[in-house]
Picture (cartoon, rainbow, N blue to C red):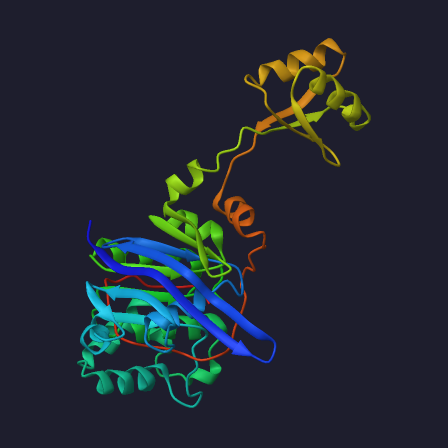
Length: 331
């Protein structure tokens, strides 16, 4: 596959009275064509700095970046029309309508105004197109931001927290839209704290922590590297937990005692757990393998809990994109 986005050894250092802070410390990232790629990291990990550096808003100290095979920031004027990006929470003029806003952006970018109607339909804002933006909910403003990024027909779309403020129905519609865009040939880089959605929607992921890449690959590959052999065990009487733990340890298992269950590893066959405990007169009420998901891998690699629905209000970067059609998002 062809790499649409390449980052190698990216470094960004900030100096202050407190000393030197490395926002990016040799960060690497590759995104292949036609993928939905999840870009994940805790707050302060360097995620937004990476996106802003890629788009020419921050100058790096070292490293190489390329978009669509062209070196950036040098070639950014040539590829900007093929890139659509929303970085950080979007800001709009409250007294303008969504239609006014998009028409102004279309005129500035040399886009036919007919495209405005298409993107409003695409993100489910057609019926509210003439309402003032200040009457919009947070979720509707997010949809307007996505619409602005879809005005031109980009090959690369970068979205930072596009599901911020959306209800469950809206999140589902966002998921469908992203998949449709990828199927149309667009490459989508999606940054989000809603890790369950990332696992559902993305073909591949990159996880960043402290300015360095800590994991990359297809979602299946990243999960496979962190598979767990743990089994959650509950017994009929909580009072038997300590005795159960002792019996399983005597049998060679590794056991962690939780408030109402045991976490058991180093057991080749789960049936050995029930057999060992039954011999002590202890009966199992639940025996369940622990499934590894993207959230647990994220926490293991970064040591930081994701913040769902986090709302940041800083500034907006809108460049250039477009795509298929779907509608009816929740707010």
